[in-house]
Image (cartoon, rainbow, N blue to C red; front, side, top):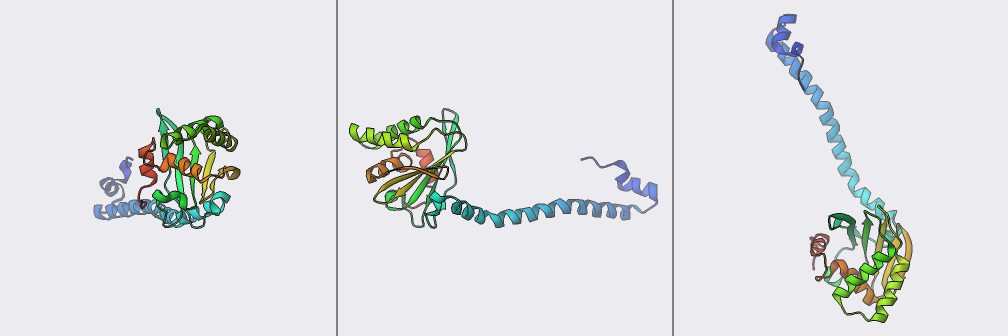
Length: 218
């Protein structure tokens, strides 16, 4: 921003007869006061933001029935999946204290996918089965049963929709869509392979896996 010539120290001295050093001091104080107001406001805003951050996470969990049941679960930072240059979804885990990803299905935890584009529910189910078959051999009978159950649980999603899978140790997986329970598959083997899409070392998205598990014990 350019300062008006009338505010310059020498101009001040010529126009008012006030000595240069006094004029310059007055201008300096004025500039300091002008800058101090927004800086002070920004500092208070920063304090407010840092103070509210923990509450935001707590309030989010309390307002989400699928997460509220996972007492003490802590979310990871969202990790974005891109495919052929397109944003597909943001993934994050909600895990309890002491969670070890090598023994993931022993813990109650959640995998949340927030979609960034429209996808057909049937396509989500089919792709999930393909990824599970990368990890283990699945009989045709079992595959058809799981595919049918996933198609019933996964609706067509639009940008902003959220599908969350909850691991129920020793039982299987519950599915929730935007906070509404949409189905379940009671099969521990399914849970291992389904969550393995993101957590197994043989995942097709090793970079996403590394980001999701960053800082967690194996």
